[in-house]
Amino acid sequence: MASAAEASPERVLLADSLISPELHGLVSFELAGWSWMSVDELVGDIELVSVGSVNADCDRLTAAELSNGVTAADESIQLMQFDRSLDIIDGSFSNLLCLETTVPTEVLRGLYLGASRLEDITGIDSDFNSKDLLAAIDGTETVEMFYGGQWSGAIGEDAVARPQIWIDGVLEPSNVSQGVHLVQLIEQGIDEVYSAEYVTIGVDTHLLWAERVDAHNSLSFRLSRSISSTEPSPSVQALERISGANIYRVVESLDAAIVRRGDGSTVVTIMAAPERKIIGFGLGIGASGGLVGDPKASGTAWLRYSPYLGINFVTSIEGGLSAELLPPEHPDFWAIREQWTLLGGVRLGAAMGISGWEFGGDIARRLSADNQGIIGYRFSSGAFRSAWENTGVRTMVSGTKWPENWDVSLNIGLEWSR
Image: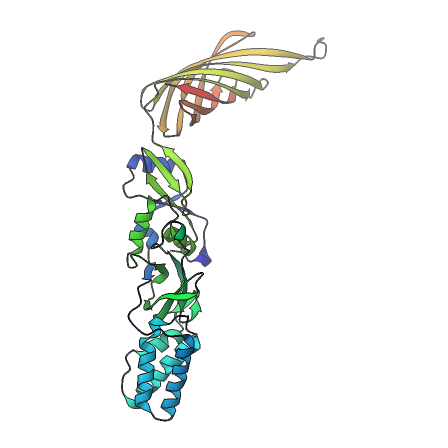
């Protein structure tokens, strides 16, 4: 998974595992170019570390009391009062998780450093691994960190935003060294520590998750659970920051694929293919022009019959008008020429939900004042998109081979079907 520094504009579709193959293919067609990704692929090497456990039983401690204790322990070590120093250091450490406020980094480092010095001098181990904790604070191998979560224990109007995450006295640092760190949660608006715990940051850790309930579920579980929800998904929004991609959730509901953003808003609802409409009638306008002759504006009407899925028998009539420049000796400058084209043929196509495509060929007969019927061959391709119930917009591009020339035409119009 790319870091935020390598952000790309790709749009990732995260699907409900139960989505039907038909709707999966339909979304792929409608949102061409968007990348499908499974939950496991999206998570990749991103490890979720949940925090937010309830504090253990201990004595409440203020930052000032902790600072005074660290100073007293340092003085006792200098006076070689090692038993007193050990009692102060162990007592301070055991109450760290009950701090009412965040702990300054230099005070925390002083506590670990004092314990390490005491162990070196006396050979007596303290109640915690001070050298590992000290190495984690001062470590040089860092991991890029991102943050997410919410207070899921609050309901309705009492719901509040995700708490601040402080690591070793620093508010949500962008990089954290590997090892064990003191993580404190500050509930916003109250500015008090809600919970604190020691958390191991590994080489694969990228996301710290603050949440009051179900604090130890996996990231895959959270994503799978959030796909079908209409509510904002903090896990998706956090992963958007990590991956630098826009992540959309796709869920099946009542024969439709609903595509949602991470904030819960709907992007588009893609309906499954309706019952096959076997008869369609359309009206449109267009233009044509060829290697010989003048460009023409045209109106067209068509009728299509589809006895089998994907096969259309089409017949249509086009009426065209063109303005022809007359010779200088003629009393009029322009003459309006009328031309009719009758067509019938077969198209191969596919209806895919709100869109469809087709291509095929027609036999064409052209009627005008200059001739009684010229036979040609037309090759057509086009696309259809639903606009209203039983009504859609059809666009066709055609090339027709006449005995004396080729011409190309473009038509767009409305089609009604049943």
